[in-house]
Length: 272
Image (cartoon, rainbow, N blue to C red; front, side):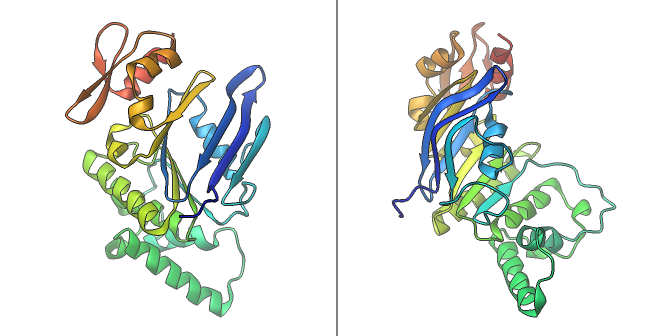
């Protein structure tokens, strides 16, 4: 494994006016490492993705992704968005959607470029097991099939860093597991670093190396067993939080004693 981090944030601060999302964030993500980014709505998870994609500048500090400044010209970055509905009447085929990850920003490929594009797309489709519906209109596919294609679109450029912004949202448990395993397989076989934004860690808990937990301008970084504790979350939220493990899953008991999923806990505590 390379000693050079795939992602580096140093002294990173992001603020919108007087509102500070995070400050003094130092994070090195190694090649092949799987980092989950957790926290309530408004804590800066998606803003972190935007910084790494080059869509939002840091207020201060530095950031590099795959050895470069973030930005659309950095082809070593793959991006998987959350599942969204696609118009059933859209004529775009599965392979066309994947191909946009290779040439969506370029004009004119030439004959050699067309051959390379086809090879790349075929490889990415095979990697996620989507060959069987590659020729079908994307809008007629199931949510799980569409999300597999989005994973393939992110992988077609052979990225060194994979940024995942709630890629499991709206998927059932079976498809959550399938998409998570595709991402995990990629990082293990190709050494791709993964930053995975999610509200709920349980679907990916067995895969995660470290957690970055963001709450109201504060953060903690560490292994899940270090961060997902009653003491750490109580400190971050500044209210009493109990973490309970049931059959290998993490649940949170809020101030009123109810057991709830991470998503609902985030929403409840964010209002305090």
